Image 1: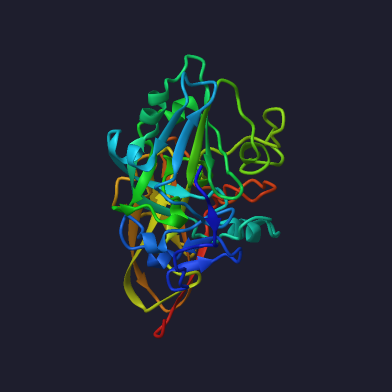
Image 2: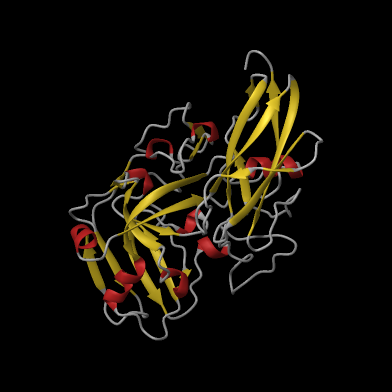
Amino acid sequence: MPNVDRHGLVKPTPPDLMEDTGSGLDYGTRPDRMFGDIVGTDRFFVRSHADTPVIDAADWKLQITGDGVRQAVSLGYNDLRTNFPLTSIVRTIECAGNRRVQFGLEVGQTFEGTQWGRTAIGTAEWTGVRLRDLLESAGITADASEVVPESLDAIRARRPLPLAKALADDTIVAWAMNGEELPPDHGFPARLVVSGWLGAASIKWLGRIDVATQHVEVPWNTIDYVMIGPGYPAAGDQARGPAITEPALSSLVELPWPARLCPGPQIIRGRAFAGEARVTSVDYRIDDHAWQSATITSSGEPGVWARWQLRWDAQPGEHVLRVRAADDRGRVQPDSTPWNELGYMHESVLAHPISVGDNP
């Protein structure tokens, strides 16, 4: 195992690109600074539970162990890059606590945890190797049931995956992001990317992957990243509630909050995300007018957000824009979100304030 130092975050987090949550480690992407389908690495949101570890790739090893493999395997950085088929995927990652601030305003309380606004979501191109190929090099046993990746940061984060999800074509161990070497804050030298699941499943700074033949309970699927409250029964021996897998269905307007616009015809853009499902429609409503259909401008395939746009002839005054997404499972964003203790999975239609005047 390599020597690991720590020194906070590495990349700059300028306020014109990123929103400071106040934790010192967690910074979101300003929605008005998202331009293409892919979010630039310089502004991609950062969610960390401890300082970014400093890892020397020359010393780094990825250990594959557990009672669910026939032999333990140790892979170096060059092994990862040269000994397995290469794959690239475009996938969206979202923290389960995204929009926690809006959730708190909705129910009249402040939730514990990172105070995310709308900014803990981003899409990138991830390049690496399929997790399946790495596991097969160790020989998966017939009774293997869960895969448990572990990070090299100070808390040694672990989040179990069912074997079927670990073996999916689009679950990968990435060593590049947006065509460049994976940056330190985003998991160098290698991280997991779990398509359509909450960001906590995409473990950064991978150091070990255990394959287990039994269900594994860790803090990240029993105490944190679980739904606690009425309607959420405890699951497992220690779990306080059901573990979160996919993030909530949600939509995002690419404007500041609140927004200021000039009068006249406008094109307003945004994104919608449905986890492992596909976004099928996006509707919008200005003030108390009827709901109308926005135009979806990208496919919004499972695991990737859909981009949308609408045309509005903005008149001077104070307005409210509401946007709701629907997916191919028949889900539609509701007007309110059932309460849970940790403020996760906020999916409500947001009332986005917009002031239209001559001097935005």
